[in-house]
Length: 255
View 1 (cartoon, one colour):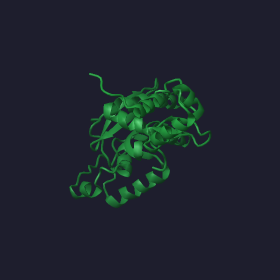
View 2 (cartoon, helix red, strand yellow):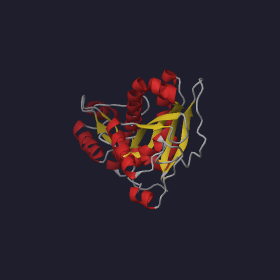
View 3 (cartoon, rainbow, N blue to C red):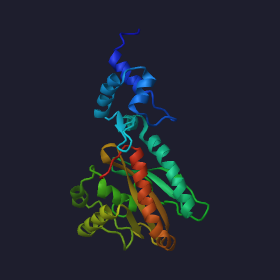
View 4 (tube, rainbow, N blue to C red):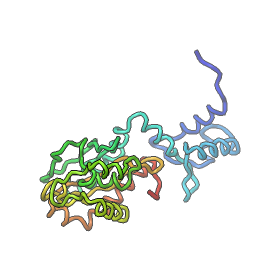
């Protein structure tokens, strides 16, 4: 049974429906013309939508676009699919440029879950440990979780001796691990140097969602020789891709 339509709410919905896959930005005048309302009426509704993050305004041209509130709500529907759909094109780009296999991990309930992989035609390394039990202290992606997730209690991890030593390079000392975390925050990326398996190196960058919440990583594993050879060019490209994925997920710097 249909109930009474609230005019102001319907107008707000009409304004939001002005945007689609082809139309990402509109001026106030263009919105006004599309919904058939005066600019003053539209301005009041747009201001309310802006305040609640359902729209955002481009500082350069003052145009409007859909805001991060939509992304936040979409996470409720299917977080895995959303991150995969946004991140996949960036994984393809970095894989093709450097001939590497790139992985996308989702961080949830203190675990990292592999949700996408773009595989290179060249030789690549496949993770041999369970993707739900990637070590936080030893893996590049795990150290990002320690550096950026607000859900991890470092005191709990050390008090219960939850850190396992996989190789002689694995960090289990608290002070050393904290120094590593501080460096990660400065560099914007994390490195794994034979800390889980001998001869295997990894670079990972953090991914954030709305409200700058750490939500996952983009990661590349390779032999030490391969990764260290391409690292000077690869690292800034990975950091850039992490930021681009995060921006599309609604994150806004600073992290």
